[in-house]
Amino acid sequence: MSLYARVRDLPLVVEACHLERLELPVAPEFTRVTTVVRLEGAGHDGVGEDVTYEADEATAFQQAGPPDLRGEWTIHSLSQAIGSMDLFPVAPAWQPSRGYRRWAFESAALDLALRQAGEPLWRVLGGEPRPVEFVISTGLGSPPDPARVLDWATAVPGSGFKVDASPEWTRDTARALAEGARVEVVDLKGHYPGTLVDPGADPALYAMVAEEFPDAWLEDPRVDDRTRIALAGSEDRVTWDAPIHAAADIDAMPIRPRTVNVKPSRSGSLEALLGLYDRIHEEGLGAYGGGQYELGPGRGQIQYLASLFHADAPNDTSPVDYHLAPRPGVPPSPMAPAASPTGFRWGAGAA
Image (cartoon, rainbow, N blue to C red; front, side):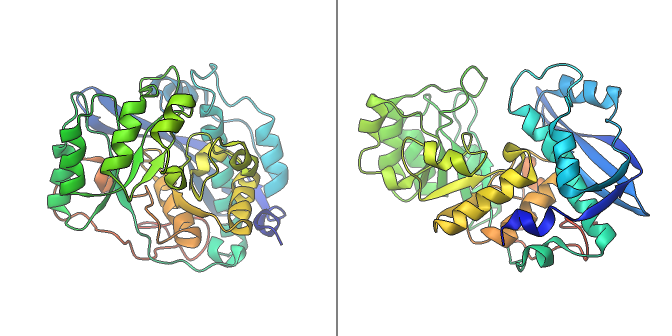
């Protein structure tokens, strides 16, 4: 039985829907804003989190309010209805944002349906929550400063890291990281054209990263004739994130992966996400979880999925504590299983 078949016919009753704003000042120039979607019905509630990055789009959504979802549904019928709606009062600046917002409603619906049924997600999917390994994920800024990583390595000894490479890196930058921290994934960010985080495709950078981090996954290169040469001999370490939304995307990658980064909000729908997990299992591929700077229940939900499908991988699913400055006393990896008794929630306050 497919994973989606295990949940698609779960019934749920929706009597109300509310939106709640979350904010976290991360830097003087950046405040992260997300939106909690809360569905209510039959004495229960279900929550999800919209991780759309543009703060003005989140504000417009919160001011416009949610669509009217009152009624009796199944997971599949509600998913179909949500998929047919335009959830943006103003068209998003970035097309993937549509999937992010859809996931907020679909994850909230799954949480509500499970809580109304008195079941936890792990039991319905036939899994067992396990301790979740996670890495600390960060860029180095501009100009690049390895201290952003090395300070965390000092504060939380033994931590693994996912780092964002940029053309500003020098050989000394890479070596400082390689010698001072356990870098498990290097994100080349080759699939964000036209955005603020688009570094282009630099063959010299790719070759240097492959050489200086011989054991790390190389995520999201932009593959062309020049970068193929730069990555020669390291193809089995290439993994994909931004282009992966559904199972069929694995077949479209220019370098066939041995493992992929799974971000539920990229999939948008439960059907696409669970179909992706089915394909990964069928083909014996590896996977690790990815975060979208969640501030609330969405963070717990990606940790929950990691606990079921890839608990021992370099998951970019660290607790929200890691969004702030390096300091001792934050919970280290791995995190203990923390599934709620019912529903699709994880961590403190998950009950």
